[in-house]
Image (cartoon, rainbow, N blue to C red; front, side, top):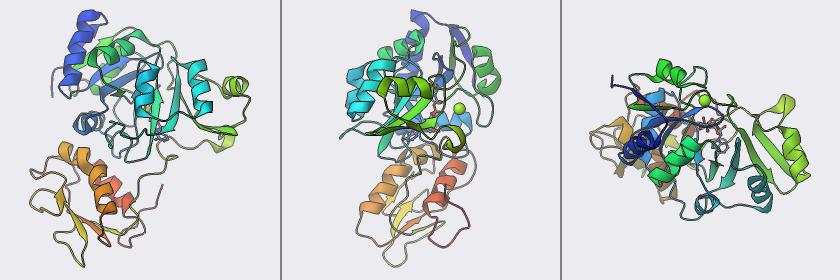
Length: 320
Ligand code: TXA
Ligand code: MG
């Protein structure tokens, strides 16, 4: 347990929050939708700390928050439709799923290893001040423990995450109270990946494009994106490489590269997708991964590894 401080939103509180972000910690901060649990999106270990605090049993890709269009363009490639949506609805409760820009500094854990990133430019001054003061894009899911309801007040955050995070910035109740609308634009349509405060009607009226995925065929948050999956077989719980496998180590198992020599789950989570990509890009015919304890963040790491090994023949996990 750590002490959770609650500070009213002002310049001094933002300065404290920015110092925590710079140190790789997490901070709860309001947006106009819900309170978010923010961390430096360019640091895998800081992003891992979000999952650790929320106790999420799996790694879903997170929304990355920016406070101006230049920052957004440094992170992702905007097509014409997404440009138009950003011009119309940012800042606001809209999240756009876009291809990562070449050289984008976003940590692979924040995108769960995907080649796309969910970007949002929020309207709330507290979140915008924190992005500006920390000089970083901030990954931020809702600031609640996994499986509990989203927080629209600082007190909700404290009830859910008190003792697990160092700081909550309190700026009163959020105005919208519902997570942002998530959209992936195609040239001829908009895919509504998560309904939210910005309606399908408003999106369609602004672009003249049909909106699909609404109504009965909403794609489940976190699942719709698919998950990064290597192109070759992946074997779990391996203590040594067989038949030329590229071995991803952990703790005492050194491997071709290691998730964490000291068996630290935060470090392992931060490196997970980078090493999967590295193993996938190697000339080895297959990948093996050392055993990782299933406690704490290890549960999420193992969930991802089981999904990545789906089809490799050794586990009964269904893909999602
Ligand atoms: O209102 C909000 O959006 C709040 C506040 C704090 O900004 N944030 C929020 O973030 O709800 P988060 O990280 O919980 O949203 C994650 C969801 C995923 O479950 C998935 O549906 C979608 O965003 N997502 C993230 N990255 C994606 C990607 N690359 N492709 C498709 N969907 C993605
Ligand atoms: Mg949530």
